[in-house]
Length: 135
Image (tube, rainbow, N blue to C red; front, side):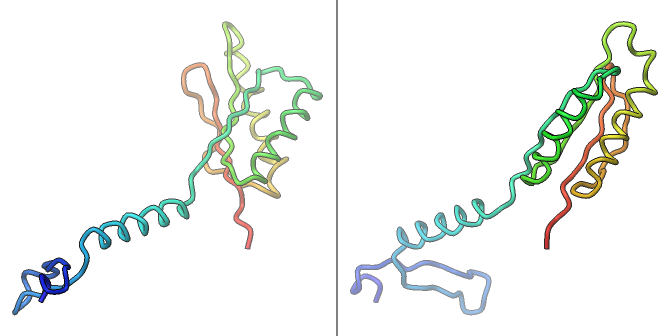
């Protein structure tokens, strides 16, 4: 029957009793499958992480400027990774760096929630903030 119609006989379920076969155009079937997978992949949410770097003694004006950028990143739906970079002997100001990151988290609390509290890795102290989902 498949040869008469110029189509392919495709085995769908070989473990069924009796095995299930379907008469279809196999190339078109593969094309449709690829198209569906592409559509699913395009609808999948891609996680974007934006970074903002501070120094342990960042001044108020610089902080406000970077806060504005942080708010924009969160409103656009990106995660925010803010970090304080300690150079040389500035590692003795760990408390200032932690306070700076907690202040940032508090200032963006209306549009973002903290995923990871400030923690020190080498010479950097990180905080991870995710946007709050809008309904």
